[in-house]
Image (cartoon, rainbow, N blue to C red; front, side, top):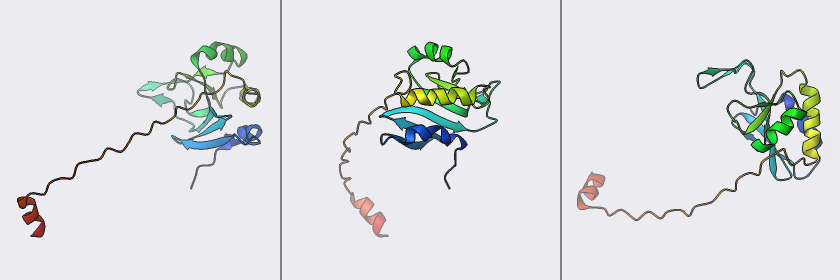
Length: 149
């Protein structure tokens, strides 16, 4: 059974557009809008450790916002509760425990809907490699006799 995300209501304004889609990844729910990955919902309360380091907030319980590092200062100035995610340092993070979570998340998703260039990353295109043709193995007389026994 697929996990139900309580924060999925944040995607409502985006879901009216035909370019909107979601994709489950790493136990989270990613949102794509106008071709870009714009948000990732993570709902794992109580998880405050990663690779032996402890944090004073849940690191996987809120909204992760994929963005380029050059946009961090302006976004963090505009939304004071945004943090650089401790594991995915290129992304910003709005913990659900933030005092301004509802107000900030609403404004953030309005900005995403208005295609604010600071939000989102273009997914990398997958390069398909040609299948390597393996040469047929020669069967020796010993191998033949082993198979027939």
